Amino acid sequence: MLSSCSSFTMSRSAIPRAASRAASLPTAGRPLRQRLNVANRDTSSLTSISFDVTSEISPELAAIPPHSQAVDVGLLPNKPSLSRQNFDPKSEEALCSQVSVEFTNSYFYTALAAYFARDSVGLMGFAKKYRAESEEERKHALEVLDYVNMRGGTVQLSALMAPPSDLAENDQLGDALAGAEFALALERLTNEKLLALHKVAEECGDPNLTDFVEGMLEEQAEALYEAGTFVTRVRRAGLGLGVTAIDQELLNEG
Image 1 (cartoon, rainbow, N blue to C red):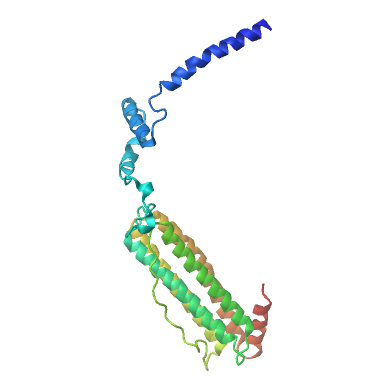
Image 2: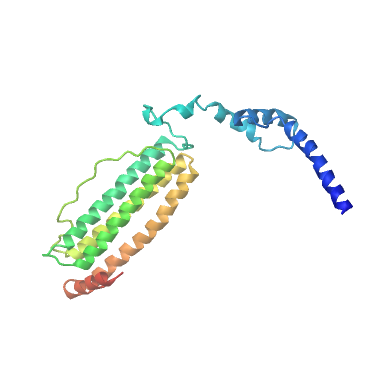
């Protein structure tokens, strides 16, 4: 029991010394910017530091507007991005163009779906397929749009070309094959647009954008293969009952 009380007495006697050491720290209770400045002066004598964060971040801190917390950003005429870095205006423009490409694809696939769903055409499986393609293209457009915002850019939307209502009508090929051939051509054109976007990313030295576009290119390669395979199936089916069989398969999928 005596040993235990002695140990407790020693622990209590150590408390003032610990408090004294804590109070002697130069950064205690000071604002963040002042603490960073103090730390910057204290590390000047250390030669083993390879990444002096306090020195390299000081220009960013110096650029913070005074009283920025009291400003309603919604009232500012120009709202600068706080996250934009290494995002060239050329890349931003090319991405906005790709948004239009994806939305246009969705628009044209919607026209194909509407055509095949007519009571005078009655290929509901084809209509289902192209409506799903339209939704997929719209999803791609929104992904690119979100990416522009994530990089601190401004999304500029443009007018879309209206597709003709008789997009798949073709007396020689038949509407099923004409629609499939058009879809394949549309996917090939989209691939070319993505390759051009990838080139812009490389020219601007933007590895983040390059990685983003390469992910889209991989998905586009799969879409090209599926579109090409579908064209082959419709070519083999010919006119008449063969197309009806494919339509029924499409209707039963999913």
